[in-house]
Structures are given as structure tokens and as C-alpha cells.
Image (cartoon, rainbow, N blue to C red; front, top):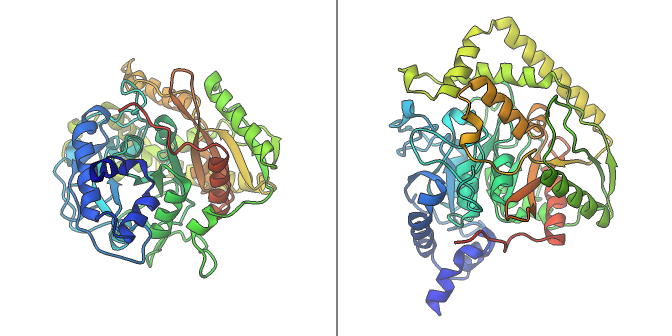
Length: 462
């Protein structure tokens, strides 16, 4: 009976596992050992981890996630544990300090089992690098898990941890969540601190969570949403005594929701399966009593140039001794960044802020916006770079993910929900974005969709 109970632990949500620990039915060490055995057996096929090492357990009996295993994306500093940023140039870098969120996660009693995979400097929508195996979706290991939080999504989807930290600068939580059939939450700008060393130059990148349930992501957000003095952005806190987990457990009420499936970008058309996933989610929202209004994509074509200018400039913040150690696509971004004049970067920052204000104002009459998460089902990692032309690779990445980056520009919270699978078994996410700083309402809506069409017990083949 004990063996049967242990073998089923990873089928439980993170909060359910926390309840077992609280009730004395399982110990944190038993849970960690269960997952470490699964990592040893399964990770060679999915490439979720760069480094596997069990952290110490700081007992916190007040935390609903006390003793629950997790993992940290390999672009967040972990003191004494290497942080490669997915780069061979930093393969042996060992930080001296923890990221603020790492400290918060440990103090809440969660036990990190290591660092999850990411592309070099988190610059790509797929998670290949030169320090670890390629991250693959457990639903079809011949296809990419997406990126840049591909390792986190693959780990949760394969049952290697129940909930994982992730971050998102242009879709990096939601893209892999869609490819791996799990829930992915991108937070609002300023909701989770990047401190003490993290710097987001242009306000695009935020922290988030990947999980099997909406409530698990909400519980992890409660842990991480503690600001540091000096943070450049602060999201308004919840009213005293309220939590994101509580928000995920209440009904959202009748909402007004915008919806669109046609990207405003030239030569970008969503795959029929992605459109079908969107349409089924749209119908579900209507069935739940929400007002859904079709609109045109509010993001103009020029947003691509703005994003690429900021992305190229941001790629230069990493100091490396030998550029030849970097992957071709990283060198391409950095070479482009070096050609930029200061005025061009300032113009892009200015245009980004004006455009974000305009779009948020246009969408203010809606409580949420529904789109596909991706314009394509999961693809083979080699598809992006098969021509050997970095410029073509960037175009392919845009064709693959034309919807997700908008919420990074505006700073809105956004989530990918695994509500649809293709006939051949590939997950297709639907994306719902909320009002600025509106994680509570967004989580409430996502949880309602989860209750209406549950996905927690849908698993890839072992």
C-alpha cells in the first residue's frame, strides 16, 4: 500500500502534496526522493534540467507548499549552485547570492531540485543550448518544449516537479506551457522582484509560474510576490488579508472579454488546430455566461521592429570573454545590438511606452482578452534554424509566436491554458490576458475554465 501511494504522488497537485506533508502522511524527503528518481529516469528524454541538486528544506508549517519540490529556471542566481544562463560561455559560473525569489521560495518551505533548461540568455522561443540536452515536450519528444522556460514546462508536464518557477520576456512562460500541455502564468510588470541582481532594462521581462493547476500557480505567486526596496516597478498589492490562492478559488462573475485569432503581422496565419483550440475556448467562455466580443489585433506591424530593437540591445547586457563560445543566433542578436545608436534605442523605448498606453486604453472596456497562445503546434527544435540564416530564424520565431509578446509590452498579466489537444495528441494552449495588475481576476477566470474543462489528470505517455 505504501508503494502504491508513493508511485501516485506525482499525480497530485502541489497543494495536495502540501496537505499530505502537513498531515504527516509523507515527508519532504520522501517527496524529493520520489521526484529525483523520476528525473533520473525520464529527464534524458525531455531535457528539463541543466543541473540537478536537492536544496535544503526550510520547514515552514504555515505555508501550503511546505516541503513541496520545485525547480528554478537557470537564468536566476542560486548561491553556490551554477547558473549557466543556457550559455557555454557561463557554463561554470557559480553565483555568490540567491535571487530574491529563490530566497522567498526556500523560506516558504519549497525544496528546489535544481535548475531548469533555457536557451542561451533566454533569447529564443525554443530551449536548445550548448550546456544541456534540448528541452522536448513529453507529449512528443521529437518536438520542442518551447522557450525560453522550456525546461520548467517539460519538468511539470513530465511529472518531474509539481510546480516550477519561470520567467517571460516575450512569451517565455506561455509558449512552453502551450507546447507542454500545462498552465503557465506570466505576472504583471512589478509583481515579482527581479532583485537583487536582476535588471530588466525595458520592462519586458517578469517572473511567473508553471504548474498543473491554476491554484498551484496562484499559491506560488503568493510566495514570490514580495517586493524588494529599490525595485524599478511595483504592482499594486492585494487588499490586506487577501491572497492570489483565494482569488483562484472564487467565481469571477460575468466578465466582458475581447477575442481575436488573426494576427496583425504580415504573413502570419494561425494553424487551423490553434484556431480550433481558440474557438472551443471562446464557446466555453460564452457557455459560462461571459460576454465575448470579437475585435481586431490591436498590435500594429511596427511592434515587431520595436521589440527586435529592444531585444538586440538587451542581449548585450551579458559580458563574455569569448564571443565564439556563443550560439549563432545569440551572436546575431548581439551584432545587431552593437550597430544600434543610442537614439534608436531611446526611440524604441519611447515608441513602446506610447504604444502600450494606447493599447491598454483601447482595451480598458474589457476584463480580459482571449487569443491563441501560439500560431503553430509544437515543432521540431531544428525547424527554427534549419536554413542556417539567423534572420530567417527570427522570422520563424515570429510566425510561431505572434500573440504572446503584446502582454510584455503592456505589462499585463497573461496565462496559457491547456484546454485542447490535436487528434494526434499534441497540446494547444489558449491565452487569456487580464487587466494591468489584475492577476487576481485573471486567476479566478482561469480557474473557472479549469473547473469547466479539467486538464490536471491528462498525462503524456510514461
